Length: 260
Image (tube, rainbow, N blue to C red; front, side, top):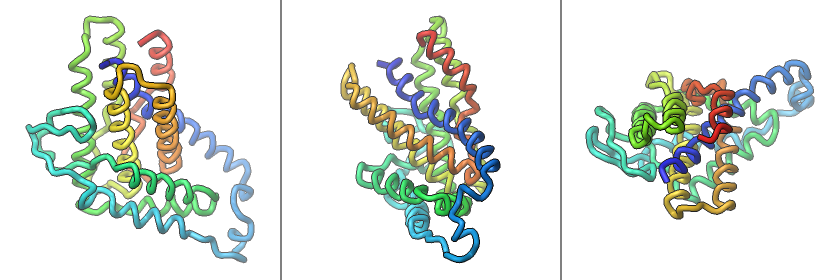
């Protein structure tokens, strides 16, 4: 069960790292294609680009990490917001909580609409560079610390003397998200971290609901992770947090293929 949790947890991290690599290639391709990646009428000034979908994302983003979207916790206590009980790190007072199905669908749909055209995608990238509110900053810092504590909890349950477990531990240690500078946190950081929190909760629920998750459950999880990776890749220039976890993609693939 624990190893299944590890493998499912690796799905979003792997896809985020993979899309990040693709983002570099997309950037090079865009440079080669020049203005052909946009709307010539908009770029010439003849038509004003519609940013209705971007405005919808901006409105939703500012509500994340606030009000009912966070949980009050106490350092040294425990929380199960991510689907498994973990000790809350010292100093953490509030964390993002995974969204319910309706709110998650709303966020994903609005993001999908906002990247449907090159012009709106560019506007979205700029909009997500806006700084997070102080309330969101506190929630993001607390969530990152708790996420890292969750990873450490999994590591502690593995047997470092076992060859395969040792490889998994090495990989998990690279997944820890660097502690962010609160003042540099952006709306893009909040959005991506919220999506990651949603996936981690889904992963835990998927494997704990059955000792043998169905193909449909894992496919749905992979699809959700892939969409999160897509958004993370597109918002790379809008975020201050390194969500790739400083992963070496080739190392991860080699280890996975060796049976870990």
